[in-house]
Image 1 (spheres, rainbow, N blue to C red):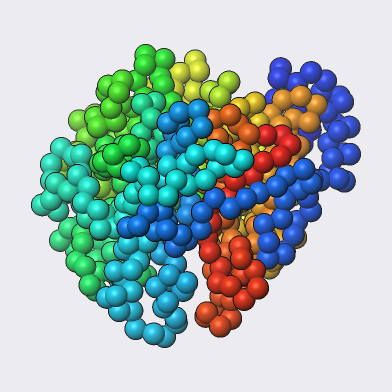
Image 2: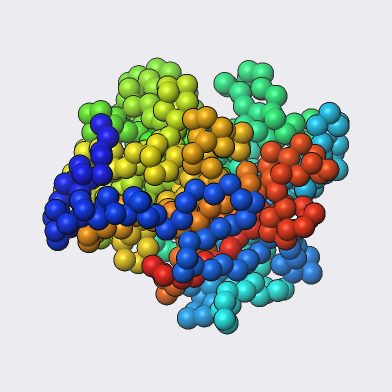
Length: 508
Ligand code: FEO
Ligand code: CA
Ligand code: CA
Ligand code: CA
């Protein structure tokens, strides 16, 4: 099911003052969007907005450390009125500008070591003057990366170990009610490959790290909790292992925590974790969604005879969530990406970015309402909220601002952009959708990304006046350092650098 603009207005129902008027606005606004799709190699902003760089790949954050590659998820935690502890994910290495690898060249151990340092995450101490700035050499500035030893919070050792070396593939994340960061390991198989079972052969990874470091694939694909002040981290295996996009936390009516998390792969599932305790995600129960029936299915081996038959123990189930979910009839989805909870209604919004083998090129945003408005419920109703293909394509990251309006960043892949069926959308963009009032449901473009880049990692400063955003992988389709497709952000002949920007302006 999908909604036209008219149906959307009806769907919004009670939150709208004047439904008839809204219909008129829709026509007017369509002819005068904030910004038109652009293919310039710039971060283009709509009138009334401006941006500054916060930090770029390779910038020094202390005498010892530098900012990592391909920044993605961002998340501020308040230190005091004018200071933040700011988490940034570094999803994957920049093999061109970072480790200087080019096609046809052998991958060396030095390159892999450089890459292992450049991924994971950064904690940055930010201070506000005229704009937000990184406090150089702050005791809080630190890097977690593919070398950091991180305990596995698990009922038993995994591949004989109680800790894993490193975190990587950190895509999106979440914030716990007790203000620790969650960072999600997404496409972990790119780094050390994958295998069906511990005693089976591993597939070769795209980055080939296993050639130099023989780390087990089962140590990756988890959600990692990080203490903002100390950098102390732990892998929460209870939330399952798959290509975690994000981990979005919200309180249940009885005060526990529900964590929504999706598996960003074609035909994979949506999950919900319910904690046992009010202030810890170490223990709890994982569920997978039957979206057609509107039911959460338990992945507890004690409750599911089919799991008991197929898996050794609960840890085995958690390592192989895809297999377990499929066995229990979970609903295959079109690549669940970011998940956000509406601050007033509690509705859960899930981007389904696309599913090309199934002919879904432009994706959609699904809205899920838990029964009784309780995130601890076992049943829900779900329906399309917005569908791509007209105003935007391939929604990925979402954020609600303090007024409850929705911001959407898109991720058409570098190789697909500016070609059919994506031609008209040009470069990736940032969009704004009012959730109430006469303009409810109208999609307005706010920003257009530099060449090949994705806009991602949306977060707001505590006063709501600054939007932090990652500009990830500009120039990623460059064939070599001599044939760069982007020179953002420095321009001229400079090499492209993933960066975090801060945006100010109207609507903020
Ligand atoms: Fe790293 Fe699903 O985006
Ligand atoms: Ca994403
Ligand atoms: Ca994506
Ligand atoms: Ca990305």
